[in-house]
Length: 118
Image (cartoon, rainbow, N blue to C red; front, top):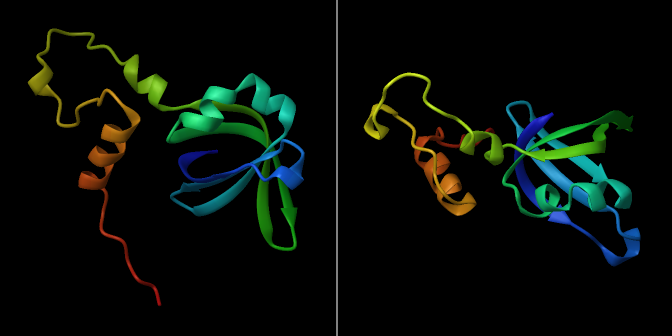
């Protein structure tokens, strides 16, 4: 699954397990990151605003969880985009920002308004 990291938690009582709340077009999904996975993908788990999570799907009383086996940042992929033909920076409608904060600001400008489903 891939999406925006809405929340990160690492409670002391969880013995090093990290919990991510990731939002995509279908809604929110809980991601459980064990300590060994966290150690391998620490930078992505801690700092990336958008992540691609590979793992096992677990359903418990209607709650969907992903037991992460791999966590990658999607912003790093955007930085590697190259123009294959002659083009100028002004040719792109969406500019690739230089930081996570500027990326989120840019997404807020193009994201649709939220709806209250009351």
